[in-house]
Image (cartoon, rainbow, N blue to C red):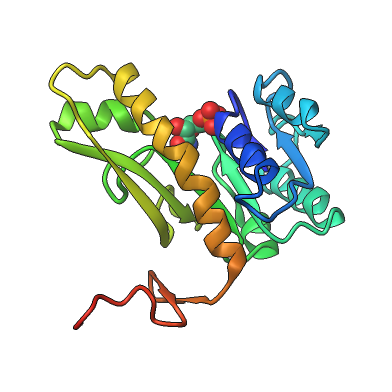
Length: 204
Ligand code: GRF
């Protein structure tokens, strides 16, 4: 997993694994910020942590090459970003094709980028939410794996809306990771399709 900050989604994944709702192992948690509070969740759970700063590399891609090298060395098959505040570069995308996930606090494709909850409030939408998607070179633009909707209340602030979206994120991310790891799906263009047709609408 890659984080930069608080790590509440990391904690949600750790708990889902501990409670056997998710059959997975977190091999390593890498932060580009040395004092990211989320690293403590990993340490308490006995998960290896690494800090790799994005600063000080001769070229931008060198940081991504190092991330990919460390993840490959641990035989990682799926990379989960949670609050990782860097664009993922070519070396990582090439090393993990269709195997890097991100969670974003909006119903994409609405409100990509930073401050998604404030963007949603400013726009005046009545329904906000969260999205788990595959990472591609386009910021928050990859194929969608799953989404959760959250009603916007008239008196919402960015903080109150973010808190309700976050509750949904903590359920959505483990479920989406489970979906991806279970297999039995393929991508048709941007669409994630279940091979068994289970996501077809009745009569459709
Ligand atoms: C979450 O809102 C996530 O959707 C966004 O960054 C935030 C990270 O929170 N990408 P946390 O570090 O997982 O608590």
